[in-house]
Image (cartoon, rainbow, N blue to C red; front, top):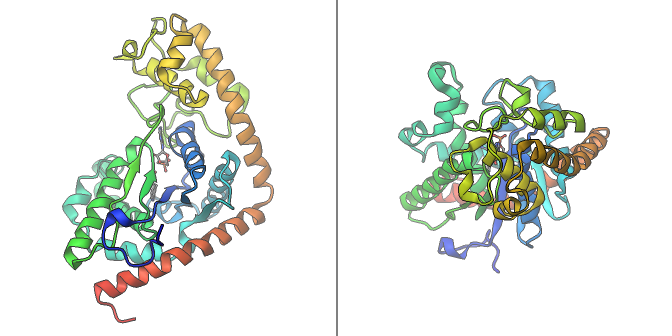
Length: 346
Ligand code: AMP
Ligand code: TRP
């Protein structure tokens, strides 16, 4: 395969490259693990170049206490490593160490249209009625996300369902840039949204996404919860009175039941049908203990390893620094060529 940094003539010719990121804006949840990190690890096995970022510049679109931001950045990096990301095989770094993201982000602010940004559902949810008080960065955030992806000419972006619209916007920005400047320079990156747990729901309300910002801690499983807490949260998880069905159609209109089965399937690396073939007919009183045992078995080693890594913050910083250096080596020539296309004297 040719090097993506060299001249390409069509998006089809881009070298395959994976990029994704998570904000260090709080603890990690089971939703982040199943919807994102676990799949980052799986993609690392395919022999494709993978870059995974702690997007600290995205985090400050809402207020972050500086000391907390530093801790959360290291904690997220520790989560990546503990879950199995290997800094020898993947490029792991934090966004602010690679200034090319912000530079390309500015250029994309001048490509993206206000109307596109206004349609972003995450903006509408997060800013809500208080849009007047939201930061300008929160509004512009999807164009920085486009820069994160495109400054590496990344072709594949593993994310949870909630980020699909932002990856589509990234394609719109790439297409408009290519069109306006008459080039085929940026690829049209594909969102990769796969598996049983692309949208893990709240344990208290099957219509809401499991989120680190939900005020109720009982609504989510945190990567750092101990075995008793995990078991208790699953025991108390909202369900309905019916037994589990024998096949997937039986989960229709049963959001809470479907969520727990999806979580089980993703943790067990099975399909929903395979899971239901084993547990169909069970009451939740039987199924919930199976689910907690599985969750504890999968998560406890990761949270233990995260705690161990957090004892050596200097080592985490070293890994992020090395990753940033490798990331810059890819980003710098792509940004330089972008400036040239736009007409900036260098
Ligand atoms: P965030 O926590 O919003 O920064 O999200 C980081 C990554 O985790 C993104 O790829 C999200 O799509 C994914 N993610 C977050 N919450 C969930 C969830 N409840 N279910 C599935 N994926 C999620
Ligand atoms: N916006 C993503 C989120 O909130 C995080 C993110 C920032 C990201 N830049 C990215 C994800 C680039 C994928 C690719 O979850």
